[in-house]
Length: 450
Image (cartoon, rainbow, N blue to C red; front, side, top):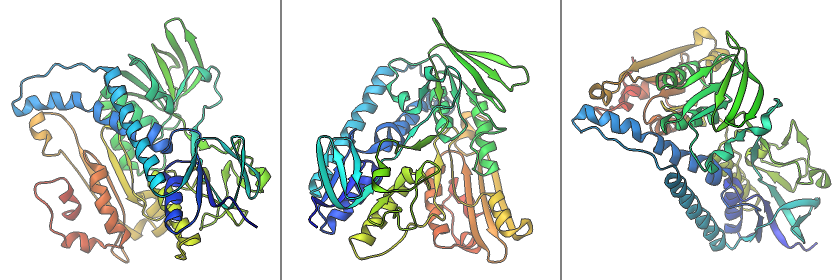
């Protein structure tokens, strides 16, 4: 049978674009449908604009800290509109880069929504397009919990569209998105209260990381209410009233501009017509095997819609492995071990490998040794601020292998990225010990722990 395309990609985010370009490099005729801007969540309403806002939020601290080094005090105010415009310009620039990359790879882009008609046919706008192989790479979207008045809240995507800076904001959710936005808004001068259902933020992270960030956020003026849930959100003429249950004395919070729902994301697959193609969905996600193959052997899925590890570099790696396997004759699978991750909070944190709890479960409490260091970084010896850095290595005693590394403090992501290479190659604690440190630096602590 003759098809319009060898390979058709539904979704123009990081995973979809990476797969499309790699497949085209192998000679496949590739089409791609994306109804929104190219780049997906990461570029348009996630990693990139959020990180730019993180940078913006840290300048007030830099201005204040400079006085400890002899600089005169700085009085500066934020132009919210100017910041938003600058961020939007960068996002637009990146959209253009993605378009040029696809053009250079000879990938045909359809700026329209796509859905399955049958296992080999997708409806793209008013067209019906056939393809021998099809990739689902539609990502995810934020969702709102079932709380009366939740329709009044903003989801994380909306944070980049606020026309004015709120003076007070209530953030619902304890995951890294909620934590990062709490720190961003606090740094930009907004009064922040974060509502957490459990007893701490960042479930799934190492306990020392969770505690370190929690303490640091409160030190920077963020109010965190644990074991709490909103029971009602009301819009008033002056803003919002958020009724909170679970605090020692249930209370009503007032946010003068917005309450943010930062309570997670779900695969964006509701309207894809997967049932028309026979693609199996399990727990709201597209079911795939280790080669990203769905229940239909010529249909694949990568990235957040398959809900394995929701990180941009993971989606890219999954996609490239898929293209290498299907079109390049180089079968390989994505390894999900020792994937580094970061939380761009204040203080920042990053991790790779097992948490202490996971290591104890896997090797036994007596099967691991934990090396931990907490210190005041050299930079803050002159700023006078009570800031702390925490570093931690988890070692399997039987093999001396480092199975986990965690850090809270400035430049955590940059430092852990290098440490992740060591863990990926199976480095032992003795290898860390034999490595000469760069002095004076915070990073040298990872090779001097005894």
